[in-house]
Image (cartoon, rainbow, N blue to C red; front, side, top):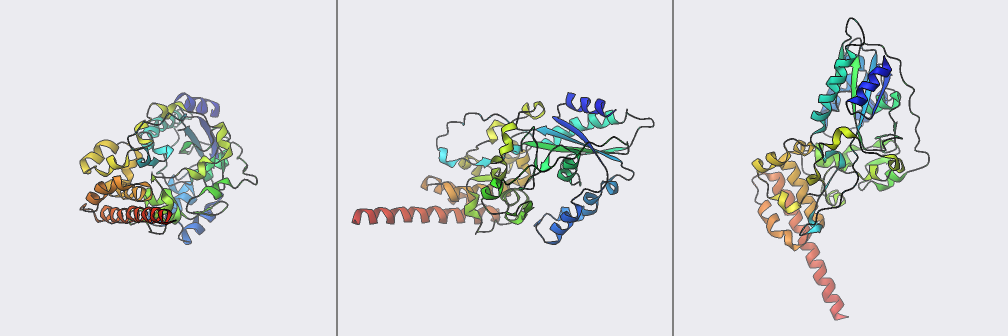
Length: 357
């Protein structure tokens, strides 16, 4: 029964399919403590759904098993475009360089769910979750043996590295659970050392309030001024802690996401993005993860990136953005203008000093 289920999942494009029980996740108590410490920042939905996340049986009464699925989004690096101003390009996290994975995976997981319904009579009740579902998916996936939770708090697979999506099916069908995956980080601490904002405050402990992924995607307000320089040219997410993981040497491309790749999102032109109005933003990003940030959030991030990396060439565009009717964009554009002008003044003083010598 389980072998047939896994075969069907792979036929539909998933790179891994394993099973665990619907018992509470092993780290549910740590999750609650994390919330109580306020490390979730403004993500209030995590508090609202804490009970479901701490016990899948609250989400689906009578649940006995959880089918965990993984789909790789790794792609072999492509040659970068030849931009007119290569220094004015932004960074988008790898996972977001596709059509919205929620929609892509949802179509396939519903087909897996339909297959589960054929495995018993009467048909078991099942519920599919893709990321937005209130489950502690990394915890359940580790217990199912998909991978292990690394020191960066993300799931690491020995077959897929760090680059994969998760999805789950909660079901009243009882399936034989797979053995859990043991942690294999060893003494490695590359991810902690790589974090630009020191959001990884200790092994296996993340303070989302300092995480660039949180600040550029989930957080809706002004980015704290003291953190802005560390963001660099990242405009949507940050892969630094994932990229340095040694297990990525085993990463391989999956078939499910390949046809939905959006190469144009890998290194977008920042000045071009800064010119987007609401209509232009929707036209370009409506079916991608970047839509989550909305125009105000994404252009806020673009302004920060330009403030960190741009030269005087960006001043006219930023001066225009500083008059944007959206206050969040205008404030960050003004900050960027100040940063660039300060760099200009510093360079001028340095040249004068060198000349005097």
